[in-house]
Amino acid sequence: MRLSKLQSMRERKSGHGPCSSSVQVMKPLRATNPYTRSSIAPNTLPVVFVVDDDVSVRESLESLLLCAGWRVETFASAQAFLSRPAAETPSCLVLDIEMPRLNGLELQERLADRSEMPIIFITGYADVPRTVRAMKGGAIEFLTKPFADQAVLDAIERATERSRVAVARAADLKVLRERYASLTSRERDVMTWVVAGLLNKEVAAELGRSEITIKAHRGRVMQKMVADSLADLVRMAAKLTLPLRPRPRRARLASQA
Image (tube, rainbow, N blue to C red; front, side, top):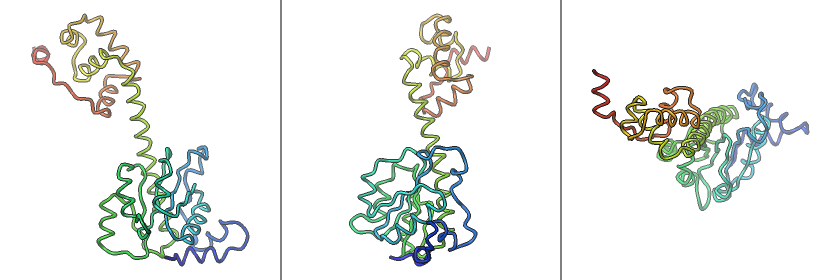
């Protein structure tokens, strides 16, 4: 499978580096990596994975993407890609469909639990059933070879931005889980009642403790969870999907009195 536009780029190299030839293919090329314009460390930049059994496709895409400022890793097979540990930074996968042994759609199924890495499919043999299957599986784009350089660059920028949001959310959730794990069993009980809307004295009645003790537990919960307010704590509980306890009947009656 050949990428005529990308391949012609390689053939027209003038010896002035990879960027000089790729920019000549389609002017102007937008969608250079937006992250390179910031102070982000190189090892935390988004990475674009390219999986294609055609070496000319891999090399051409690598040249184009390096020119645009992306970190790139290429793989000749789905198996080779699966042997690489999951990236901890934002990423996306440019994936060919037609490959021996394990094809692109089968690899997509194996990566179902890695939603933080959007997939861009490329193929020289598009058909409706496979396109539908790929998009239902969560693919962000489906490009038919030969495709315009700008099309793949735009798709990569969308994919990495989506990945950035997903990775940030996952990191935030990990921190919340670590904070919640630091709570004692009693502090977790107090947190559950507090986010349900109970006052300190009501929590004390439910747990058979003094109001002063509950106030101390609540203070430690707020400190350990790094919550600035009750509203913050409620949002954290929602992100952690903690089971919400219904307000006790006596607490509801007291609030209505």
